[in-house]
Each structure stands twice: as C-alpha cells, then as structure tokens.
Image (cartoon, rainbow, N blue to C red; front, side, top):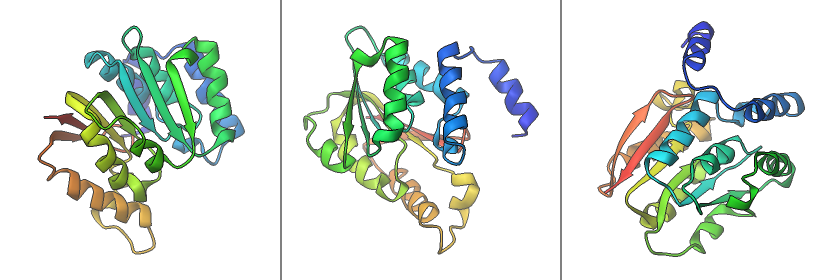
Length: 212
C-alpha cells in the first residue's frame, strides 16, 4: 500500500466527520511518537459500518487511547446502545473524553480505567455483547479473547487490530514480544471452533470474527 494509493482509498470512502479529523490532528500534534496507536481513518469508518451492520446495542472496547475508535463505534450504536471502554491511561483518555463530549456521544460511553482483564471478568457472564474491539497490549490479546468470546452473542462480532504487526508475525524475532504474542494469537484464534473469521489487510491487519 503506497502513500498515494492509501490517500486514494481514503478519498473514495465516506469522509470522516470534521471533529474526527480534528482528533486525529490533535493526537498527532500532542503525541507524535504515540500517534501510530490511533486507528486509521479507514479503520474508523469500518468500525462505524460494522457496528451498524450488526445492530449493536452493547459493545466493548479494550484499548481506547485518544478515543477515535470509541467515537466511531459509539456513532454506529443502535438507539439506547452502550459502549464500555477499558484503558489504563487517564492522560490519553482525558483527550478522548473531550471529543466524545463535543461529538454528543459521551452519554453512550462508559470508560473504565484499570486492568482490562479484571474489568472484563466483572462483566455479565452471559453472551450479551453485539460487538467487541481489541486494540490494546499485545501479550494479553489471548486473555482478552478468552474473556470476550463467551460474552459475545451468536451472530455478534469480534474485531481485533494489529494482527499483522507490519508483517513481523511471519517470522517473529526473539526481541519482539509483541510479534511473538500476535503470532501465537493468530494461530490460536484461527482454530477456535466458536467463531468463523477472516483476516484483512486493513491498517496493520484486522481480524473479523463472527460468533457462531
């Protein structure tokens, strides 16, 4: 994917709202070394579309950063829908909260700061989630997966980001624990009989898993 082709791709997708573009720009300005953690414009659009397609009323996000993905999901929720976000950083999510408020979706989002695995374990155990998005610390992806899959209803969707890790999952180096963790994750979930899934070369790789 060349830069020119990526710009073409974005230009031929429904444009993000101006507020979202402001959030992208501010994240890059105030967190230049971490801005890569933010989902891309095409990923944000995809998250909104997927949320609408499954008619999501109950959604969970693990890894919120400055809030673009949460904003995208919240916009796609059905009337009365709720999104619960898990993150460990107040600094990053304070920026997110400001944009959620401006977008008029703050009342749809519950943000929980702290250990995500512990927080997920406290959620209702029955399969009630329509959508789950994982984009957090890579070594814990399998933990988040194991906690979320039983809580996603049949016909619901799990979305997992960064599954290609710039191609390094093909031959993870011993000094790259993220690549090693993602390679293990990819190998495990493709064998999970509870889902059918497809890995897409969107952004840094996205896996879409349909709950059987």
